[in-house]
Length: 298
Ligand code: ASP
Image (cartoon, rainbow, N blue to C red):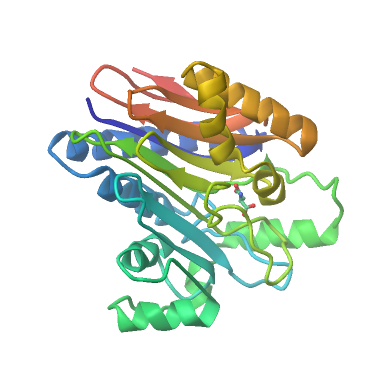
């Protein structure tokens, strides 16, 4: 049985319109990817393609529509992992590529695992990925959100859209029984230049092996310190292989020690969960009997 589960960020989504939009977009994306998985696509290609589609959609905080640093710059992070081979590829602080996940995938086939900044851009050029002007990734909506944030700069600032993060991620199980995970982000709105979040940190924001695949979202500092993806894997044994319970315990511990977040997880034996301690998590799922998103079920 093939399965695809994706997320479009955790947080507190105040606008009903944005809830409906993200619920519909993610619902459609899992529909498309499911068909391809069903026809034999690998889990690795499926998570890459799902994340690429969300990077290209301006509503998410990844690729086009990424949030900016306090200096108004783009610094994107991404990571992709093949559960079967444990190969991985990721980027940190890139600004000149349209799809950080496609660059990450090229890196996965290379001897190095992670590239940052200009070195990542150079690797992209050497491997057939065109460099772009970072301004092309900035949308008017994000310019406005940064301006609002800078005006009322404080930890308590509440974005009129809600406190939300919009990172994108995917986990999938293919018809060979293999898992994969991928995550891509612009980071957090108004972050300092050079700040790195959890997304490209193995076992924190993204993880996959032959048993489990996971992708997290929320404040990267909380996620890195709690190593949430790996923590769920450890908890599986304690929870007698009950994925939902293992994930809840990991999230509750992380919430108590650091703060709220969201995570999507899938196991080789077919369990899956989209769990969160934030008020909301944008997610969608499809297998051969269920097709749903956090706002929609048909
Ligand atoms: N986790 C991301 C980061 O801290 C943000 C997000 O999930 O939207 O970079």
